[in-house]
Length: 518
Image (cartoon, rainbow, N blue to C red; front, side):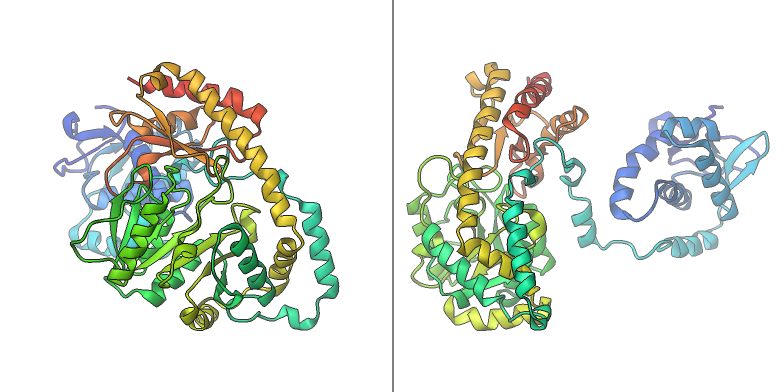
């Protein structure tokens, strides 16, 4: 009889006897627990590792995966295999014994008890919410997203920026000035749609930098792009309406639409963004686009395709959501005019954020709506989310109005261009045989603060991403962004890593990738 329990589909047997499971349908208990723990941690993030193990073993006994009379591993063995303290395993076994799921025989081991059907039903009901309600199917889709496991804030992790580049001294001076001038009225909630001074500053900035046609009243301030999309989905779409979505694309945006009951239709992008369809089929209510820098592949939508989408939206009464992602950082030719700036029929809502250009914690974003919708959107935003605090918005308005924002963009644009060049050059040198034959390639144009590296479709990019994580580097598997056709590749950022640091790290990443390429 092996000392370690196995997990499988075994017939019940009397407690005094020991069972030998069929190895074709079993795993050692510690291996099974190691497989189940990541999903359990995502489903119940508030539970400790100890209580997760208790829950997994309890559920395995309830559903017969661990049948009666199976001997569990010794406390010493299970502790060693799971890399936890032996006292923790002792406490786990004692808890399960107190609940009636196992019996601990002094000197003879720990065995699974036979659980009667009525006890099973009652225990299942009691165990369903021992630490609170379980996640819904929609909730599990968010917390168990395949990209979550790779998101660790370390070199090359997308979404992480270099905060040392932010002009903190200037920002603090502006904050001190506004707090000195602040009156009691500035402590209450602001006006619907946001502080007028900030809406004015954003409107003027967008007219100059992106060719956006808008008045300050059309600018709606939010806490982030997800909140912007949530409000748009609530006000412009009904449950069951269809939204066309780029694939690969921004998964957080897709969850906002899904959470509002919209039907997602993924559309595979090419190197110029989302293709505009020919006539036929049911037109969508919403179309989510990142035309200035397709996320994550980096393609830029040409002028003719932009015109095609505007014509499509006009004919089918669709709304184009233009997320002007990373448009501030373009290192080659001048950027094309925004979709909103080309629109003559009010079919485009333009979205932007300051989280990527300033710092994530600022929690300020905005979107620009057609004039006829501006007042209602502003009041709906206030009703649903309340108005933001005024001093933070006033500081940002001054930061933009006094030229600090444009100065910051010019400075960081030069720094990020250098870092991008160092990263791509180093990886091309480390992986030159594969680049030379076209097996791998960088996608997109010189825009933004991340890049995508396409891999052969026969390569499992999640295996590559995990190998990179084991080497201390965070990259995202491209397949995790795909709602349509699966593509293999890596998404990596150079924003938070200096040019000097990039060289050895990129060489290390190149070695990891080379070891897994055919």
